[in-house]
Image (cartoon, one colour):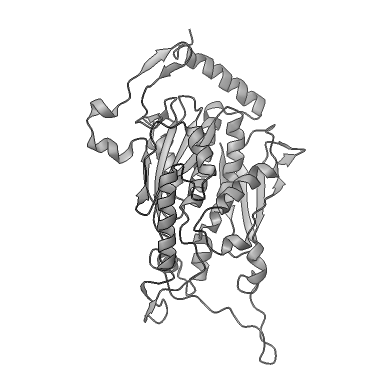
Length: 397
């Protein structure tokens, strides 16, 4: 089974990810991952951190001579800002003071930000210094997940599966993409500073971000991830934790700042009758079973149906504000304006890239479960045999 773990803090030495379950024989290079890391760092509305970091991955294990070996893949992404935080984020305890000098512990962070993990994390872990929470809760961790997603995307590409993402709305500016080819949406999004494929909406979004920056505020938005080339039959209806739409929703919701998920028509489906919502079924020897519409978002009963998988996510505004809201000091309990940390005005375009990564991983995980094998060649044989069965209408006779 495909799985991964990440480790590392926002201002620590670096981020680490370990992936287990990638079959042997998959071509994989650092550039496959670095390309996705660069996409995550781009986007209008990002903060000063992006001027410091230039994320580059080092593959520590699991790959030899450009091919995966079937063993765990370890990825390391150094934090270039680490040089400025060595004392604050030191692993070892400060040495005892000598002659009244040295041994000073870093000043604790005690002013929690509304909307952040600062306060609930401190209460959960009994912390007196919010830095022990905010460092790991930071969206910096998503760089490791994008790296993991890049490996998953490389595996999916071997089976003709592609993942695209684009921004639908930021703040009050938005549109709903309907009837546009996913590849074209992805291409247009790549050319946009806010990853929006609609030029008119892009101009509105830029104005919204500029206004928020001027007012010391932040804005959220909505992005959409589409996956093409997925065969029917990934996921399962037999138990709640095997349903692919549930797993996709959990994966996307786990991204920092995400507050809502839709699959396919999503909440719009609740306002229409079944005769409008449900996708009629067709069949042809060339395509197998297919549907002229895709309100289900490519998933029915927790199982892919062969249509494009469509996942939409709503991201809240970033909690760090340059005109901070009111808060209460963790230690003194005195009211304060919430602490201000270097931050973005809008991170929706970056979150879209992270969304692509976690969706890619879940699709790849479902693929390895369905066609699981120790080598890429064996997995392809299983996949080819299954596709032949699907084109015959699901019969093995």
